[in-house]
Image (cartoon, rainbow, N blue to C red; front, side):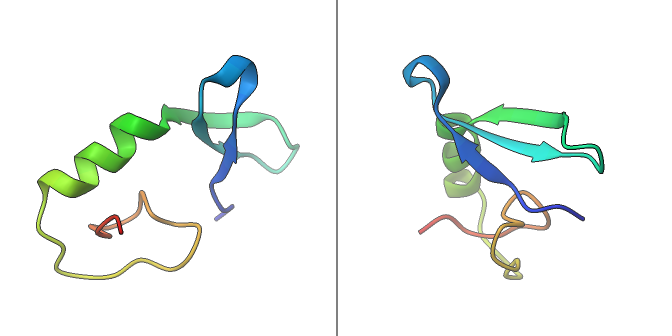
Length: 59
């Protein structure tokens, strides 16, 4: 599983995940991802770069 990376094209920060060929596989806005983490109580921690997997709590 590839790690998420943060990009900021045109000032819009996004988390992306790339496939084996290096093309963008999935993309989500940073603010939406962090606010979704804050709305849920974390039961388990996720590994670095895998914050969208499981219920990792944003810090």
